Image 1 (cartoon, rainbow, N blue to C red):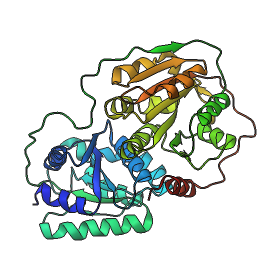
Image 2 (spheres, rainbow, N blue to C red; image 1 turned 60 degrees about the vertical axis):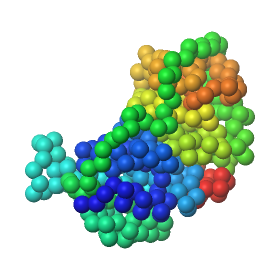
Image 3 (cartoon, rainbow, N blue to C red; image 1 turned 90 degrees about the horizontal axis):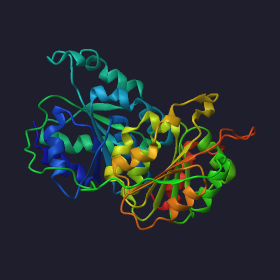
Image 4 (cartoon, rainbow, N blue to C red; image 1 turned 120 degrees about the horizontal axis):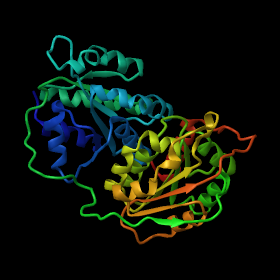
Length: 385
């Protein structure tokens, strides 16, 4: 058994100062220690996949002196499969995973862990994530972290430490609340705009006009959103998700919080937003003033054939306001985008839903630049890793 401080301080010495995750009883002393250190950054994620995407955003903007850790119970690996297989693996965005081993064979546990416990190693191996047991002796900590960082640096992919019960000695939580969360925020009034619905093409052109390359990063959701942005103008400050549906917003949050010198824009879609609506609460609570969330809502999963979503019955702007966003806009007029980017007096993340027409150019190309190359280009552009 080790003390939480022994691991966290050894990790800090190797650049790990960002943490995100969902608690597990095995992680309790570890999380309690991190929460009470104001020099560390901890984000309480709505689910484990969001935590992985958020740390991927931190990594996107980081230099080699800063690293991130995603923490979860092994049952949460199910929630994290998508970003672990189509975001961190595809773009080569490394992070350290701390995964607890509930239901470990030979160790009595609750019935819900009876299946996930035995298959946890195979799940990690299937996702091509090397793993080892979390250190339980002080002298094991440094070598384990060195193996992890060496792998992460050489491959650009995650490494996992699997934590057994009783690995870390108890550490009392003496601090109430969470650092970095905006407190005592009353819901803002939604501003609504009426006009004539526009195309995605028109909306993206307006976004490009408001996102100068030298000071802004634009992250586009998977599907036609990213492809059409690429077709209009493939710029060095843009990244196009090719999977990880719904992960663009937590990824943008990680980048925005770790790089306050940049304005970060998350281009979302209605289907993607519906898939991970817990991210609204996280962005509302933790979102900084340099984060912009624009949801282009055409009421359809257009890139898979145009099947309808339920978005037309959802008031996304009111949800954003209730979740703590500092600005919430809704409408079908391009003036929504002008107001979104022009509101520089808000203290927190800003949100807008723009209702757009369905329809996509018939000759819409797929990006010729690979995910790895678009990530490397963006990191070089913003002075990242």
